[in-house]
Image (cartoon, rainbow, N blue to C red):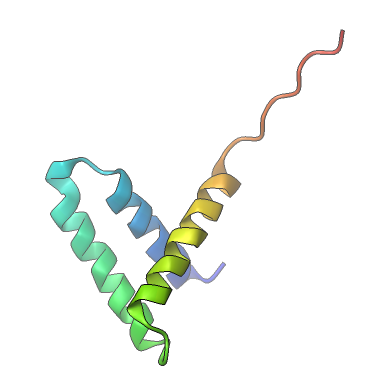
Length: 74
């Protein structure tokens, strides 16, 4: 995965999962990375790009999750 995209996804997840007291700082981090990504992607709207980040973030979480354990053989 592109390191910039991974950093953006991790910033989105950190913002989404943080305490309310930490939200302004996490939001600023995410917005800064998002603006940089949008500058490098001309012709892509902020809304479409954000939807893509949300989708990729959910895929990223699924990939990071541990696989389910198999039941013991009877």
